[in-house]
Length: 188
Image (cartoon, rainbow, N blue to C red):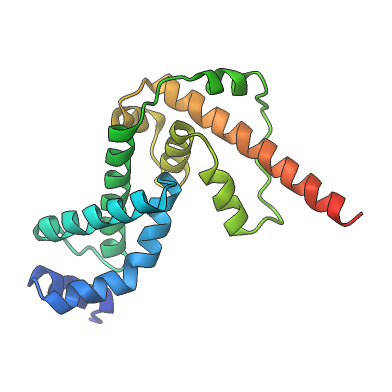
């Protein structure tokens, strides 16, 4: 039976080896920053949330159970997402705002067409969504949560989750359309 690098690292973390924590940080901080920045926009807040996430990982490593390749990354990602959501809930409100009502008037049932757009551009478009829409969109698309689960996580009604997801998709479709039109106009 082959033991992979992730399992060896997990075993070292469970033994509380200081060097293993440094190795973990160096190996995963970039991808975890990316996960966190899908939810949190401000760079200082991303840094704080990541720091809290690593503290949470250290405190709860005894509860980690290696279940195969990728389980360590999944465990860390879940912690980062939870810490990001905790930060958002503590620092904002998911209630409908005037901006939400304005957006509702311009909604479309169009699906976002991500073809011919770089991952970096898509990420920027997602990051530009209003906070509540962005959180729901990320939980639904990237974390594969149901609207019922999202509602429980965020403390909102299930239909609010579905509504915010629909509006987020509509906004993304509009942003993508505008982006593609501006790119086409540049080459004419």
